[in-house]
Length: 427
Ligand SMILES: [Zn+2]
Image (cartoon, rainbow, N blue to C red; front, side, top):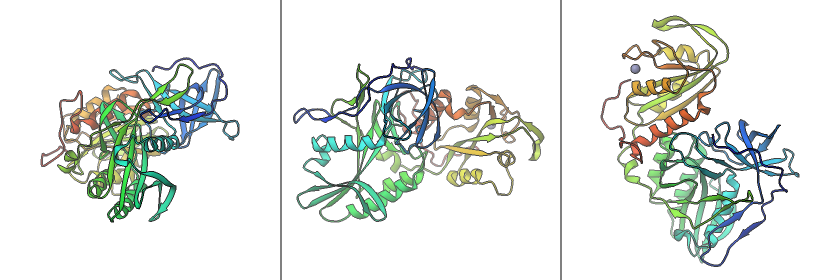
């Protein structure tokens, strides 16, 4: 993990400038010097726990994304002191040298509210060609039961715009959302109704941080969102731009250089993303338990975390939802363990790959295989692996998930996978 030692206490880091340097300048949204700290955990969505020297503390995080591949324990946080705020600190960004082999050093803005300010600057400077000539008329406007970031105007013409901050940008490809978003899907439907009328346009501006050239709605995390994107895209404009934050030698964070337009290969989604593929279930067993597991008989399970690998030839979403439910008729080995688990998280991978190969890969990242579990129909040693700590916070787990999810898109470093068509997948 590439974090540097904690920075000495700097002066109050206050954002001091949003400036432009003439017409063709790049965006500058510069903070004051930020304090460096080490990320320890995220007690809830809006708080992060950090260590700075010998001291531990909490900081506010204005980002509703999951950020699982960014916020790995040990990642360096960039904090702003907020004496007027009860918590006292705000997490503005994060930086790392390498999280896994082949990873590139990166700096990201975590504060999603600031990304709206970046969007304002880009629009004002005419750096988003599709929005040139438009000016911001209103912010935070309510429409159709949803709230949108901007209403833009150009004479009598209007543009309803929503801005999304994207940090899930790896191996050349950016995905959004990084967690299921029913709210995001409703946004798209309202935008489609608005944008379908004369003199009105509607769109989503995805501001992507990371060395990528391609953007796609994340059909793994949220198939319904991706399908809605496809359905509304003749009425809603999808504008994906890469913006690069840079950390100055004084510890300040700013955006430098003009944004770069990303390609959105719709044909990949149009070709059909089926509700099928593989999934990983991460379960937490709070205490040791002797559990009678169907045909496997009684087995003593240690407390800790378990990763189960499964697949569904069709209805992957429904299968995963079934696993998340506690009450049901028990059918699979995993149902018996799930009944004793306090927490379950699911990671669908909508790609045509081998379930047994994925199970073997999970056992290689660490932990200990539970022999025979979930492998009644195959020759594997097992499809369940025990981990003492939560595997989702392991760099190797995140790297595996990202690589597997990029396979159907055939991005850099992959042999070029494919989506599931009629091919049979083992279940
Ligand atoms: Zn197997």
